[in-house]
Each structure stands twice: as C-alpha cells, then as structure tokens.
Length: 301
Image 1 (cartoon, helix red, strand yellow):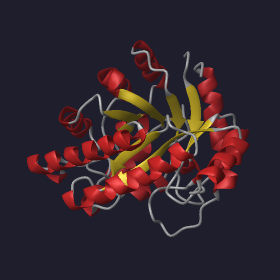
Image 2 (tube, helix red, strand yellow; image 1 turned 45 degrees about the horizontal axis):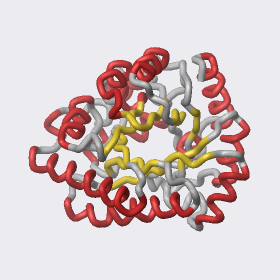
Image 3 (spheres, helix red, strand yellow; image 1 turned 90 degrees about the vertical axis):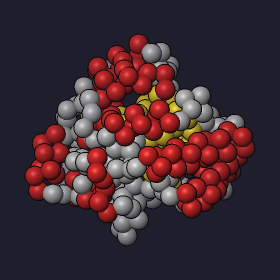
Image 4 (tube, helix red, strand yellow; image 1 turned 30 degrees about the vertical axis):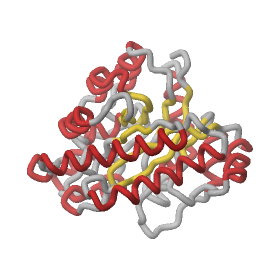
C-alpha cells in the first residue's frame, strides 16, 4: 500500500502506560531492537521512558534511523476534574515532540484505562450497565475535545482517540457514541484492530465504517481462544494480556488483509504501528517483532 510506513511501539516490549511495579527494558534496547527488526518508526511510550530533553530524544531516535510517530496520553475523561491535568499532560508531551522535531506526530489520547475496577475486571465482556450515562458521555467528549483543541492551538499537532479495553470506550457501540459526540475535523481515531476485536467488534467492518476518521492505526491481533477463556474464567484485563490475548500478527482472528483493503479504499497513507502488548518480562519481544514484520511484508507492507 503506497505511502504507508510501519512502526512498532514500546508496549511490545512490556513498556506499558500502566504502573505495574515491574522491571521493563530500557529505551535503548527497545529502540535498537525496533530498528533491527525492520521498522522505521516508534511511539514515545509513557512519559519518562524515553528522554524528556528534546535534543536527547531526537538524537537517540535518529541514532536508530527511526521516526517518532506519536505518544500515548491517558486521561480520566469521564471526570471533569481530570480535564485540566489532562490538557497539561498532553501539552507537555506535544511540546516535547514538537521541540524534538516531530511536528507531525500524534497525541494518542485515551481513557485512563485500567483504573476503574469494574471495567478492568470485565474487559472483553462489559455490559451496558457498566457504561457511562448521558451526562458522563458529554463530559467525556468535552474533555477529549478540550485536549485536542489545546494541542492544535499550541503546537498545530493532531490528536487521535484510542479506544481500549479496560476503559470506558471499549465496545463498538461505545466508540460510535464518542465519535458521534466529537468533531471529526478536530479529533481523529486511532483504530486498534486488537482492541476492537477484544471489545466485540469486527476490525474489517470497523475500518470500513470509520474510513477517513481513521488518522492513525495500531495493528494488533486477537486470540479468540484466550478471549473465551477470559470470559469463562473471569480474568481481568491484565490476566488476559498475561495469557496472550494479543498474539503475533496472523495467529489470531483479525483479518488484516480485509482491514488493509478497507483502509486502502479510503486512501489511508498514514502510519501502521504494530503492537503486541505484553506485560514486563513476558515472552521474546524481539523475535515477535521480527515475526510480525515478516508477516506484514507478506501483505505488501
């Protein structure tokens, strides 16, 4: 697909946004291995994972011949009292990326996933009773728009919303609600194939439905066997990840060929960021990253 470039992200090495109190690889290892396995871009990771000095950040990312394509910013958007802090966090990250010479990178905005016990413990099987009410949805959407507007006004950078299991925007219906409540010219969508599948959706249909609202893409696969075990055994989000609900690309249920066809039909030419979320210390990230890159080459990427 013409114009699409492929990146990976620190979460594939266990460098997650969650405070899990566990040792993770440092940014030097992650960046080196992203480059060695054939990727040309990376996301920033949690604040402080990579250098927070712009010159140092530019140097270490460039050293591995990578581009910086975005940064994940979690905000508890359902709480109005969290919005001001969320704007400040987003501006801090956007300012770092802009000063480091990456003005086209995205703020990847998300709910503060994993912090609401009921949503976390029922990830992949939430019910409507666990969702937001009408006024809460309005608060959530206003907060997302406030962050996106501030980032645009201050740095001219774009913001995309990342739907995510263990947060308030997990299911296709919840994503529909948020997209309907927000300005498509101001807030784009970071479409994540694995989270969409774990949340109960068909990623190919989702990619077709949201079309040009999709400004950024995370390619993640979903193992339906693990998803079913999560439902029957009552695992929470983190146990599901630990058990491998997000598997190597091509080994799960996501039809990546169909997703690519849907994106291609809409003229998508942005970044494709591979994510195979693991907990710190899990698995063999570099081997998986190499396998995932080889799989995408088979699809023409």
